[in-house]
Structures are given as structure tokens and as C-alpha cells.
Image (tube, rainbow, N blue to C red; front, top):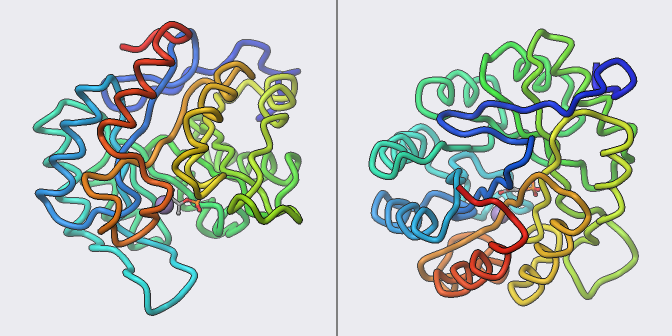
Length: 263
Ligand code: PEP
Ligand code: MN
């Protein structure tokens, strides 16, 4: 179902009032975690003004440490809905359980399966039944074929609206949090009709590397970007070091505009 041989035309996935794939470049941007209503709304307005089409924000955070901030859960989803109402932008949020999926369908436009759950086959099947488009992140140590098989699980449940997101993989390199596998973009373009998004924020973990790799992703043929943006990165409850300030995000959007049709 993911194979281009049986579906030669590139898929275009509808998300709220926008779409991913085809000739437009999608920019998903927002905080790692929804922290407060004010925080999310200020970020949503800022990324919209810069040209983003989808606002992201985590309400269920799969943190490495159980003592780190775990997310606002349903309350966070309500703030995401408010962000959509105020800005008109489509919304995406990660889900980590069936409970989270059941809440997400009430409030947001797209669900995200995170890297750590890429081979949670139960969750993939439930995501396939949820009726919302799904952004499937690549597992920390997943091959491209394993990733496509995970997408297959979702589509096999009757949901063809799957978008892939490269977010860096584990290698021996320690200068960056993960290693952005930019080569997966042309490989995926050859193998599958599904749209491909690149997330240079989680791939590097370092704010300064986000812009150059965002440009590399567009040059490689990605259909869009996922970028973490925060109103005050130094105080962010998660992923502050990789989050762009409003000013840095504006600059990124400005510099990629000549290469991309931003809506
Ligand atoms: C995220 O997008 O907030 C996230 C946790 O990403 P990943 O699953 O790629 O680590
Ligand atoms: Mn994050």
C-alpha cells in the first residue's frame, strides 16, 4: 500500500484546511510541549505570521526520564483547539496511547506517532482506525523498510492519509543529538508515494543547525518541515536547546521562501 509501483502518483494528504504533498511546502511549527494556554497561543500567532501552515504542540510527552514534564494531556489538546480557532491553522499533536487518540479526535486535525512508538503495532493499528491523518516519525534505529512497514500497518486499517517524518537516527556521532538521514528523502521518493517531512529540530538537538538542515531538506525534495519554536526557549519545559526563537523562525521562513511556495 505504500509502494509507488502500485500507486505512481504522489499522495496529497488533507489536514484541516491545508494539505501535505503536491507542489506546496508544508511548515509545521510550534513548541515541543504545550505548557500553558498563553504560551501556545503566542507561539501559534507567531508561526502563523511567519508563514507556517500547521501548528504543532505536544500534550502527551514521551520523555526519556519519568521525572521530566509529561504534558498537559487533554487540557493541552483544548489549548490546541483554541490555537486553531484563533489562527485558522491546522493542528498536530503526538499520541502515545488509545486514550490519547480518543481525546485527540475531538480537538485536533492530525495525530503524530513519535519515534519511540514507530513499532508500537497496537498503536499503529488504532491510529489507522482513528479517522485522522497520521504523521509517522521514523524510529530512532529504524531502517527505511521497517518504517515503511509501520506505515503499512496504518494504511492496512483503511487510513491512506499517512505522512512520513524523518527526525534523525542513532549513529556513533555525538556532536548532534541524532544524525539527520537526509538521504532517506530521495530514497523514499523512489520507493513510496507518501509525502515526506523533515524535522531538523529533533534530528540535531541544536538550534544553530536547524536552519541549514531545513534548507538541505528542501533541496533533497522534502514536502515540508517540522520545526520547534518557543517564545522563551531558555525556560522551555522540554527541548529548549533546539527550539528557535520567533526571530530565528522568521529568518528561516524568510530564507526558504524563494525555494518554496508558502501559503
Ligand atoms: C516531538 O515531535 O515532540 C517528539 C517527541 O519527536 P520524536 O518522536 O521525533 O522524538
Ligand atoms: Mn521535542
